[in-house]
Amino acid sequence: MKLLKPKIEDYPGKLFKLKIDNPDLDFAEAKDIAKQKAEETGADPMLLSWYQGKTGESYPNLECGPGDKPAWITYAESRGGDLTIDINEGQYVFIYLSI
Image (tube, rainbow, N blue to C red):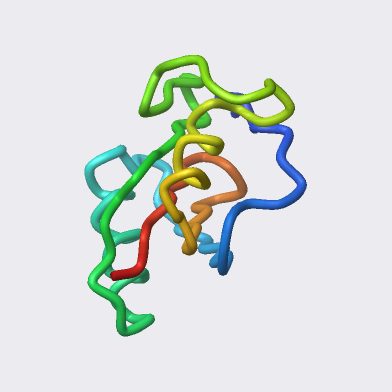
């Protein structure tokens, strides 16, 4: 299945790129992996937004900002998002606030 990769040059905050060799990786498992990685930074991470490259689905699903970035990124940036976990080059992307 082809991924609907977001055309993003710079994600907010520190970026971790993870490669997970599991063809059956689903959203719940990816979310757990991302949270574990975020917690390894010593933070108590709060998930602000996410994106699924398989479907193009994102949270929050709203329109905001000037439109130069997807709304889910603008939303996270405006709330202090400072940690991004990119799994399998855009298959799943999670943006957290380190607390």
